[in-house]
Length: 340
Image (cartoon, rainbow, N blue to C red; front, side, top):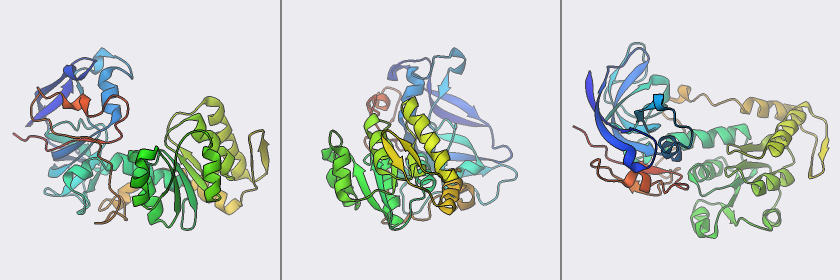
């Protein structure tokens, strides 16, 4: 048994419900690894969980928090291949990452890219997996033009960089304050708001769209501009009517016949490309790439967004809830976890 210092929510509410507690961590079981945590990613879902936004079940208290970390493997369980003590890694899952040590399933642990610091790597895996999955699902390849709504967010920035690495042209929607940043990644930024469809159309035809914001505007513009509705990807909640339309058009697109809707029209799909897109909706198997969750991570490659780096040296510092800022922190960091 190892003693671990962890941040837990003792009830539901604000940052005042968070406490440091000493807990025991068992050794890794079969298919598991024990990791000494160097940094933990802080995501909006974390404060939503302890605030009660997803429910206030008392049986879930005290609640451990944190879905992604970076660190060094301390021990491995039986049946674990490709990972050994001393490996620098990143990991994700229900691991209680706000802690000095965590147990993680080996299939959710990947070697840390050497080009990323521990702090950068801690905030990479969840957004990186989401970005890769969306690009695979929409079959974005060299020569395509992809419209990314919410391109300046955590997932959006990585999707923008990865799409550019694939040889695609990226039209990026974001507030004007983020346009210079997006231009730096090679994207063509456009601002939200009335006239968005016309501004995007003026740049050129759109082959695929990633909706990372879930607004009516994003859904409507994507539906209007992307001929093949099977190449519209979204991971935010959208209105049921638009969701039914997207799901229906994807099914019809894979079957091939032309279909119509008062708002837009989809062209006949190539059966082979439809099959590729159908396969693309499967979750990518990152376990086969354990040594590098993205082959395009390199010294000058994609970087996660870090809005508010925050170090919690003691329970009295209330920076955890201050960093996520309630509603719009796409990626924060709890850095340099104190080790006993």
